[in-house]
Length: 285
Image (cartoon, rainbow, N blue to C red):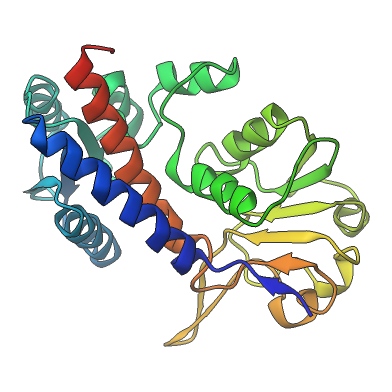
């Protein structure tokens, strides 16, 4: 039976450390500030934004929520981003995706100052990640790497298979594993014989968004499984991208859904906001 990698517990530990650092910054007159921007009334987005704001307040951070109507133009949103870029009390800016169809998401993300891009999506920060320079790392992949570290997984020399090639998770987490000296294979919808690829992996990172696509029998005995997927089945049931019950019989360690990677995403957003505030306080931008 697998060891469960408890994302809630790891996140709670990190948040306590962040809260301590926030308190130290406050004594220096610096309050880490995060601005969230929500355009429209998507229920899931509203929940995510509220959770992020609540988490900031719990740790003593400054949080400002901007809610705009679905009819907001791209020019209006760009104007708000420009104001936030120049606001010294705001260290991190998060524009919740998806945006209404009249707004180009890439244009908005590129307008956010790289030093306030706590989501890690700006091309400048993506480029720095690519070449291994210090940068804001995307929150979900960053959370995955912290979980592997906390679970005592040394990636050096390991065969890592990432299932999924999104710009948000798959590609960046593959780069992060590569920087830890793993041998990385990225799989996707066009991959031939996916089961064979997964069976050869010491570490499987599933981020494809298909309920229980990765079968338990594909997991090599003793492998580590990180399931990034969150898929709703029916009214209440949540499942990951991995067939958890069967996979947990073969893996040495595995993340659950819910309670695995999910709690880490917001935690790493808070961490990035803290780091942005520290850099602003020292003038190191």
